[in-house]
Amino acid sequence: MLIRSIVAMLAVAILPAAVQADATEGLTKGSVELTSAGPIAFAPDGVLLISDPMAATIYAVATGDTEGDTSSMKPSVDDLRGKVAAMLGSEPQDVQINDLAVNPQSGNVYLSVARGSGPDAAALILRVNQQGEIAELPLKDVPTAKATLPNAPESAEGRRGNPRMMTVTDLAYVDGRVFIAGLSNEEFASKLRAVAYPFENVNEGASVEIYHGAHGAIETRSPIMTFAPYQVGSEQHVLAAYTCTPLVKFRVSDLKPGEKVRGDTVAELGNRNRPLDMFVYEKDGKSYILMANSSRGVMKITADNVGQADTISEPVEGGGTAGLSYETVESLSGVLQLDRLNDSSAVALVQAEDGKENLRTIDLP
Image (cartoon, rainbow, N blue to C red):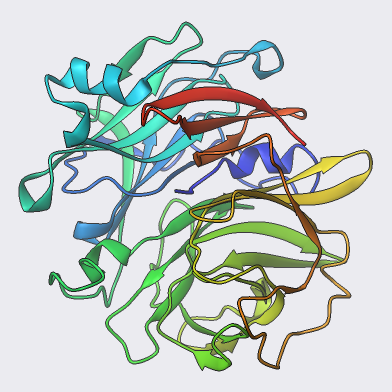
Protein backbone atom coordinates (compact mmCIF):
# COMPACT_ATOMS: atom_id res chain seq x y z
CA MET A 1 0.00 0.00 0.00
CA LEU A 2 0.23 3.08 0.79
CA ILE A 3 1.82 4.14 1.69
CA ARG A 4 3.02 7.50 -0.50
CA SER A 5 5.39 10.43 0.01
CA ILE A 6 3.83 13.20 2.06
CA VAL A 7 6.84 15.45 1.56
CA ALA A 8 5.91 15.64 -2.12
CA MET A 9 2.45 16.86 -1.15
CA LEU A 10 3.97 19.59 0.96
CA ALA A 11 5.58 20.96 -2.18
CA VAL A 12 2.15 22.01 -3.44
CA ALA A 13 1.30 23.78 -0.17
CA ILE A 14 -1.43 21.41 0.90
CA LEU A 15 0.09 21.48 4.39
CA PRO A 16 2.53 23.84 6.13
CA ALA A 17 6.23 23.18 5.79
CA ALA A 18 7.71 20.82 8.34
CA VAL A 19 9.11 22.48 11.45
CA GLN A 20 11.94 19.97 11.89
CA ALA A 21 15.18 21.73 10.88
CA ASP A 22 16.88 18.46 9.96
CA ALA A 23 15.04 15.16 10.20
CA THR A 24 18.31 13.30 10.85
CA GLU A 25 18.77 15.14 14.15
CA GLY A 26 17.83 12.98 17.09
CA LEU A 27 18.67 9.73 15.28
CA THR A 28 21.37 7.52 16.79
CA LYS A 29 23.45 4.81 15.15
CA GLY A 30 22.02 1.34 15.47
CA SER A 31 20.64 -1.61 13.55
CA VAL A 32 17.13 -2.40 12.37
CA GLU A 33 16.03 -6.04 12.35
CA LEU A 34 12.67 -6.37 10.60
CA THR A 35 10.29 -9.20 11.35
CA SER A 36 7.78 -7.99 8.74
CA ALA A 37 7.69 -5.44 5.92
CA GLY A 38 4.75 -3.06 6.10
CA PRO A 39 3.89 0.43 4.82
CA ILE A 40 6.72 2.89 4.25
CA ALA A 41 6.86 6.68 3.73
CA PHE A 42 9.41 9.47 3.66
CA ALA A 43 10.14 12.19 6.18
CA PRO A 44 12.38 15.11 5.09
CA ASP A 45 16.13 14.83 4.48
CA GLY A 46 16.02 11.33 3.03
CA VAL A 47 14.70 9.74 6.23
CA LEU A 48 12.63 6.65 5.49
CA LEU A 49 9.84 5.59 7.85
CA ILE A 50 9.54 1.80 7.94
CA SER A 51 6.74 -0.10 9.65
CA ASP A 52 7.14 -3.58 11.11
CA PRO A 53 3.52 -4.53 11.91
CA MET A 54 4.36 -7.92 13.48
CA ALA A 55 6.68 -6.18 15.93
CA ALA A 56 4.24 -3.23 16.35
CA THR A 57 7.18 -0.95 15.60
CA ILE A 58 7.99 2.06 13.42
CA TYR A 59 11.58 2.90 12.49
CA ALA A 60 13.06 6.09 11.09
CA VAL A 61 16.22 5.42 9.05
CA ALA A 62 18.51 8.03 7.50
CA THR A 63 19.19 6.71 4.00
CA GLY A 64 21.75 9.37 3.03
CA ASP A 65 19.91 9.50 -0.31
CA THR A 66 19.45 13.27 -0.59
CA GLU A 67 20.57 14.30 -4.09
CA GLY A 68 18.70 14.18 -7.36
CA ASP A 69 16.23 15.95 -9.62
CA THR A 70 12.76 14.43 -9.57
CA SER A 71 11.61 16.69 -12.43
CA SER A 72 13.74 14.78 -14.93
CA MET A 73 13.16 11.25 -13.67
CA LYS A 74 10.91 8.62 -15.21
CA PRO A 75 11.47 5.32 -13.37
CA SER A 76 10.51 2.24 -15.39
CA VAL A 77 11.33 -1.41 -14.74
CA ASP A 78 9.77 -4.34 -16.57
CA ASP A 79 8.86 -7.34 -14.44
CA LEU A 80 10.02 -5.68 -11.24
CA ARG A 81 8.86 -8.50 -8.99
CA GLY A 82 10.63 -11.04 -11.19
CA LYS A 83 13.86 -9.05 -11.01
CA VAL A 84 13.55 -8.71 -7.23
CA ALA A 85 12.99 -12.47 -6.95
CA ALA A 86 16.05 -13.21 -9.08
CA MET A 87 18.14 -10.87 -6.95
CA LEU A 88 16.97 -12.69 -3.80
CA GLY A 89 17.36 -16.17 -5.27
CA SER A 90 13.61 -16.81 -5.07
CA GLU A 91 10.71 -17.49 -7.38
CA PRO A 92 8.41 -14.55 -8.25
CA GLN A 93 5.45 -16.21 -6.50
CA ASP A 94 7.47 -16.22 -3.27
CA VAL A 95 8.02 -12.45 -3.32
CA GLN A 96 5.47 -9.82 -2.28
CA ILE A 97 5.97 -6.08 -2.84
CA ASN A 98 3.92 -4.64 0.02
CA ASP A 99 4.47 -0.92 -0.54
CA LEU A 100 6.49 1.63 -2.48
CA ALA A 101 7.56 5.16 -1.64
CA VAL A 102 9.35 7.76 -3.76
CA ASN A 103 12.16 9.68 -2.08
CA PRO A 104 11.16 13.27 -2.91
CA GLN A 105 14.77 14.47 -2.73
CA SER A 106 16.37 11.91 -5.06
CA GLY A 107 13.49 10.42 -7.03
CA ASN A 108 14.67 6.90 -6.18
CA VAL A 109 11.93 4.37 -5.45
CA TYR A 110 11.92 2.32 -2.24
CA LEU A 111 10.12 -1.00 -1.86
CA SER A 112 8.86 -2.83 1.21
CA VAL A 113 9.32 -6.51 0.36
CA ALA A 114 8.51 -9.88 1.92
CA ARG A 115 10.22 -13.07 0.74
CA GLY A 116 8.38 -16.23 1.62
CA SER A 117 5.21 -16.47 3.69
CA GLY A 118 4.10 -17.06 7.24
CA PRO A 119 6.30 -16.59 10.33
CA ASP A 120 9.48 -17.52 8.44
CA ALA A 121 9.08 -14.79 5.78
CA ALA A 122 12.07 -12.49 5.40
CA ALA A 123 11.49 -8.71 5.37
CA LEU A 124 13.70 -6.19 3.63
CA ILE A 125 13.75 -2.74 2.02
CA LEU A 126 15.01 -2.28 -1.54
CA ARG A 127 15.96 0.81 -3.51
CA VAL A 128 15.44 1.21 -7.27
CA ASN A 129 17.41 4.00 -8.97
CA GLN A 130 16.75 5.83 -12.23
CA GLN A 131 18.68 3.21 -14.18
CA GLY A 132 16.45 0.45 -12.80
CA GLU A 133 19.21 -0.98 -10.61
CA ILE A 134 17.91 -2.72 -7.49
CA ALA A 135 19.85 -2.79 -4.23
CA GLU A 136 19.04 -3.66 -0.64
CA LEU A 137 18.93 -0.74 1.79
CA PRO A 138 21.54 -1.32 4.53
CA LEU A 139 19.89 -1.45 7.95
CA LYS A 140 22.94 -2.12 10.13
CA ASP A 141 24.91 0.67 11.83
CA VAL A 142 22.65 3.39 10.42
CA PRO A 143 21.21 6.53 12.04
CA THR A 144 17.82 5.40 13.32
CA ALA A 145 15.02 5.89 15.84
CA LYS A 146 12.36 3.46 17.00
CA ALA A 147 8.76 3.71 18.19
CA THR A 148 6.93 0.76 19.72
CA LEU A 149 3.13 0.99 19.48
CA PRO A 150 1.10 0.01 22.57
CA ASN A 151 -2.00 -2.21 22.52
CA ALA A 152 -1.21 -4.07 19.30
CA PRO A 153 -3.54 -6.93 18.27
CA GLU A 154 -2.54 -10.46 19.17
CA SER A 155 -0.97 -12.56 16.44
CA ALA A 156 -3.45 -15.20 15.26
CA GLU A 157 -4.37 -16.62 11.89
CA GLY A 158 -8.00 -16.11 10.95
CA ARG A 159 -10.41 -16.02 8.04
CA ARG A 160 -9.28 -12.50 7.17
CA GLY A 161 -5.59 -13.08 7.86
CA ASN A 162 -3.51 -12.21 10.89
CA PRO A 163 -4.81 -9.08 12.66
CA ARG A 164 -1.29 -8.39 13.91
CA MET A 165 -0.34 -7.46 10.33
CA MET A 166 -2.97 -4.70 10.57
CA THR A 167 -1.17 -2.98 13.45
CA VAL A 168 0.04 -0.51 10.83
CA THR A 169 -1.99 -0.05 7.65
CA ASP A 170 -0.57 3.31 6.56
CA LEU A 171 1.68 6.08 7.83
CA ALA A 172 2.83 9.57 6.86
CA TYR A 173 5.09 12.35 8.09
CA VAL A 174 3.26 15.66 8.50
CA ASP A 175 4.58 18.87 10.05
CA GLY A 176 6.85 17.30 12.66
CA ARG A 177 4.61 14.33 13.46
CA VAL A 178 4.16 10.81 12.16
CA PHE A 179 0.55 9.77 11.62
CA ILE A 180 -0.04 6.02 11.95
CA ALA A 181 -3.25 4.16 11.09
CA GLY A 182 -4.04 0.59 12.08
CA LEU A 183 -5.67 -1.71 14.60
CA SER A 184 -5.32 -2.16 18.36
CA ASN A 185 -6.45 -4.88 20.75
CA GLU A 186 -9.10 -2.59 22.25
CA GLU A 187 -12.89 -2.80 21.88
CA PHE A 188 -12.83 0.27 19.62
CA ALA A 189 -10.02 -1.26 17.59
CA SER A 190 -9.47 1.21 14.73
CA LYS A 191 -6.67 3.62 15.67
CA LEU A 192 -5.17 6.83 14.28
CA ARG A 193 -2.09 8.06 16.13
CA ALA A 194 -0.10 11.27 15.85
CA VAL A 195 3.41 10.72 17.25
CA ALA A 196 5.94 13.52 17.64
CA TYR A 197 9.03 12.94 15.49
CA PRO A 198 11.53 11.49 16.28
CA PHE A 199 9.24 9.30 18.35
CA GLU A 200 8.90 10.95 21.70
CA ASN A 201 6.04 9.94 23.96
CA VAL A 202 4.40 7.26 21.81
CA ASN A 203 0.74 7.40 22.80
CA GLU A 204 -2.25 5.06 22.66
CA GLY A 205 -3.77 7.08 19.83
CA ALA A 206 -7.36 8.05 19.15
CA SER A 207 -10.02 5.40 18.50
CA VAL A 208 -11.79 6.35 15.28
CA GLU A 209 -15.23 5.31 14.13
CA ILE A 210 -17.22 6.00 10.97
CA TYR A 211 -20.68 5.76 9.52
CA HIS A 212 -20.44 3.30 6.63
CA GLY A 213 -23.20 4.07 4.16
CA ALA A 214 -22.82 0.82 2.21
CA HIS A 215 -23.38 -1.14 5.43
CA GLY A 216 -25.81 1.34 6.99
CA ALA A 217 -23.99 1.11 10.32
CA ILE A 218 -21.45 2.70 12.65
CA GLU A 219 -18.13 0.83 12.51
CA THR A 220 -15.40 0.89 15.14
CA ARG A 221 -13.25 -2.11 14.23
CA SER A 222 -12.59 -1.55 10.52
CA PRO A 223 -9.10 -0.12 10.00
CA ILE A 224 -8.18 2.77 7.77
CA MET A 225 -6.58 1.18 4.71
CA THR A 226 -4.89 4.27 3.28
CA PHE A 227 -4.97 8.00 4.00
CA ALA A 228 -3.67 11.40 2.94
CA PRO A 229 -3.32 14.70 4.85
CA TYR A 230 -5.31 17.65 3.54
CA GLN A 231 -5.81 21.25 4.68
CA VAL A 232 -9.46 22.39 4.87
CA GLY A 233 -9.46 26.14 5.44
CA SER A 234 -7.19 26.74 8.42
CA GLU A 235 -7.58 23.23 9.81
CA GLN A 236 -5.49 20.17 9.09
CA HIS A 237 -7.45 17.02 8.28
CA VAL A 238 -6.77 13.42 7.41
CA LEU A 239 -8.72 11.96 4.48
CA ALA A 240 -9.04 8.24 5.15
CA ALA A 241 -10.30 5.43 2.90
CA TYR A 242 -11.79 2.19 4.19
CA THR A 243 -12.67 -1.13 2.60
CA CYS A 244 -15.95 -1.12 0.69
CA THR A 245 -15.29 2.09 0.18
CA PRO A 246 -16.16 5.06 2.42
CA LEU A 247 -13.96 8.17 2.29
CA VAL A 248 -13.87 9.93 5.66
CA LYS A 249 -12.35 13.16 6.94
CA PHE A 250 -10.98 13.60 10.46
CA ARG A 251 -9.92 16.89 12.03
CA VAL A 252 -6.36 16.48 13.30
CA SER A 253 -7.19 18.64 16.34
CA ASP A 254 -9.71 15.96 17.42
CA LEU A 255 -7.19 13.12 17.36
CA LYS A 256 -6.23 13.23 21.03
CA PRO A 257 -4.84 10.13 22.77
CA GLY A 258 -7.58 8.08 24.39
CA GLU A 259 -10.40 9.95 22.66
CA LYS A 260 -13.13 8.28 20.58
CA VAL A 261 -13.57 10.29 17.39
CA ARG A 262 -16.21 9.90 14.70
CA GLY A 263 -15.15 11.09 11.26
CA ASP A 264 -17.32 12.72 8.63
CA THR A 265 -18.07 10.35 5.75
CA VAL A 266 -17.85 12.54 2.64
CA ALA A 267 -18.08 9.86 -0.06
CA GLU A 268 -19.18 6.30 -0.68
CA LEU A 269 -17.18 4.97 -3.63
CA GLY A 270 -18.71 1.53 -4.14
CA ASN A 271 -18.78 -1.81 -2.35
CA ARG A 272 -16.74 -5.01 -2.80
CA ASN A 273 -13.57 -2.99 -3.10
CA ARG A 274 -10.43 -2.27 -1.09
CA PRO A 275 -8.51 1.00 -1.45
CA LEU A 276 -4.81 0.34 -2.01
CA ASP A 277 -3.05 3.71 -2.11
CA MET A 278 -3.87 7.40 -2.38
CA PHE A 279 -2.36 10.88 -2.46
CA VAL A 280 -3.53 14.46 -3.00
CA TYR A 281 -2.28 16.63 -5.84
CA GLU A 282 -3.08 19.87 -7.66
CA LYS A 283 -3.73 20.35 -11.35
CA ASP A 284 -5.00 23.43 -13.17
CA GLY A 285 -5.64 25.17 -9.86
CA LYS A 286 -7.81 22.39 -8.43
CA SER A 287 -7.15 19.70 -5.82
CA TYR A 288 -7.71 16.01 -6.49
CA ILE A 289 -7.24 12.69 -4.76
CA LEU A 290 -5.76 9.87 -6.83
CA MET A 291 -6.77 6.52 -5.35
CA ALA A 292 -5.85 3.01 -6.54
CA ASN A 293 -8.36 0.26 -5.73
CA SER A 294 -8.52 -3.51 -5.78
CA SER A 295 -11.72 -3.76 -7.85
CA ARG A 296 -12.72 -0.29 -9.05
CA GLY A 297 -9.66 0.95 -10.88
CA VAL A 298 -7.90 4.26 -10.25
CA MET A 299 -10.23 7.05 -9.13
CA LYS A 300 -9.65 10.77 -9.58
CA ILE A 301 -11.73 12.35 -6.80
CA THR A 302 -12.51 16.06 -6.71
CA ALA A 303 -11.17 17.39 -3.39
CA ASP A 304 -11.87 21.13 -3.57
CA ASN A 305 -15.29 20.68 -1.95
CA VAL A 306 -14.17 18.52 0.97
CA GLY A 307 -14.74 21.34 3.45
CA GLN A 308 -18.33 21.90 2.30
CA ALA A 309 -19.24 18.27 1.62
CA ASP A 310 -22.35 16.96 3.33
CA THR A 311 -21.77 14.18 5.85
CA ILE A 312 -23.32 10.89 4.70
CA SER A 313 -25.53 9.56 7.50
CA GLU A 314 -28.08 7.44 5.61
CA PRO A 315 -27.62 4.05 3.92
CA VAL A 316 -26.27 3.97 0.36
CA GLU A 317 -27.84 0.81 -1.00
CA GLY A 318 -27.18 -1.53 -3.90
CA GLY A 319 -23.45 -0.86 -4.12
CA GLY A 320 -24.16 2.73 -5.13
CA THR A 321 -22.00 5.82 -4.74
CA ALA A 322 -22.65 9.13 -3.00
CA GLY A 323 -20.89 12.29 -1.88
CA LEU A 324 -17.77 13.69 -3.56
CA SER A 325 -17.67 13.24 -7.31
CA TYR A 326 -15.02 11.17 -9.07
CA GLU A 327 -14.06 9.70 -12.40
CA THR A 328 -12.42 6.37 -13.12
CA VAL A 329 -9.14 6.81 -15.01
CA GLU A 330 -9.62 4.20 -17.70
CA SER A 331 -6.05 4.48 -18.97
CA LEU A 332 -4.71 3.29 -15.60
CA SER A 333 -5.53 -0.35 -15.02
CA GLY A 334 -3.87 -2.92 -12.79
CA VAL A 335 -2.33 -0.31 -10.44
CA LEU A 336 -1.33 -1.96 -7.15
CA GLN A 337 0.69 0.83 -5.51
CA LEU A 338 1.43 4.44 -6.36
CA ASP A 339 3.24 7.48 -5.03
CA ARG A 340 3.73 10.99 -6.28
CA LEU A 341 6.99 11.75 -8.09
CA ASN A 342 6.69 15.46 -8.99
CA ASP A 343 4.13 18.09 -9.99
CA SER A 344 3.07 16.22 -13.12
CA SER A 345 3.73 12.52 -12.58
CA ALA A 346 3.63 9.59 -10.20
CA VAL A 347 5.30 6.19 -9.91
CA ALA A 348 3.07 3.12 -9.95
CA LEU A 349 3.44 -0.63 -9.55
CA VAL A 350 1.24 -2.00 -12.33
CA GLN A 351 0.15 -5.59 -12.81
CA ALA A 352 -0.01 -6.46 -16.50
CA GLU A 353 -2.36 -8.97 -18.12
CA ASP A 354 0.38 -11.60 -18.02
CA GLY A 355 0.61 -11.21 -14.23
CA LYS A 356 3.99 -9.47 -14.21
CA GLU A 357 4.34 -6.43 -11.96
CA ASN A 358 6.01 -3.51 -13.73
CA LEU A 359 7.26 -0.21 -12.34
CA ARG A 360 5.96 2.69 -14.42
CA THR A 361 5.94 6.49 -14.43
CA ILE A 362 2.44 7.80 -15.09
CA ASP A 363 1.13 11.27 -15.88
CA LEU A 364 -1.15 12.81 -13.26
CA PRO A 365 -4.62 12.81 -14.85
